[in-house]
Length: 227
Image (cartoon, one colour):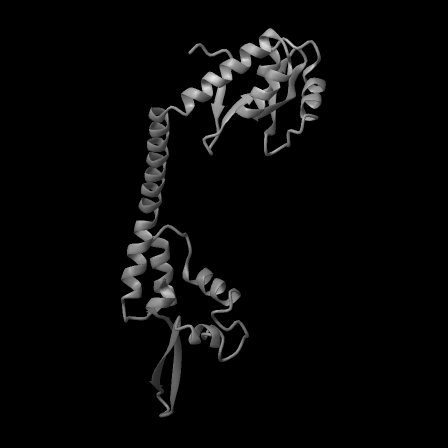
């Protein structure tokens, strides 16, 4: 079939026709803006039957923004018929042929295969992106070993996020996982993070030279917390 007027498709597999191209083919004497406005009075609805688009077109004075409209094939057919001209009949007949070819069983199967291929490729890309994260999450969530916040910062950095222990401590405090109030509990897990099983506190008894003992508390991140 000779292409009288370009017919494109969108992501929903709907056939679209440029209003300006159709206006030019129909050889309408009225300027495009007034003509299209008059055509919409036949009941066509924006964002249902057509969408408004803006294109940059070079002119003698530089670049000018030109408004166009991408209309669905049914609208293009009806507008062609409304013209009541030989060009209108020719355009309508052409659109009917395009529609017939589009709905041919062989073409329907081809489009279905293309859609399925796009979906498979999208899933493959998504899986490739998520696989390293999933392996990391599985390994740490299965672990019964809690680690220091500084060690977690190293793990995160190895997985592509540039962060150190100091910045991670700050982030955990800001997000409410560690206590940010200065004092003996500073940098200790909040009740929320303890209830969620994200942290635990390691207590170490320290013996001093004068004979007294003290207890050092260190926050450690559980496997769940590492995820």
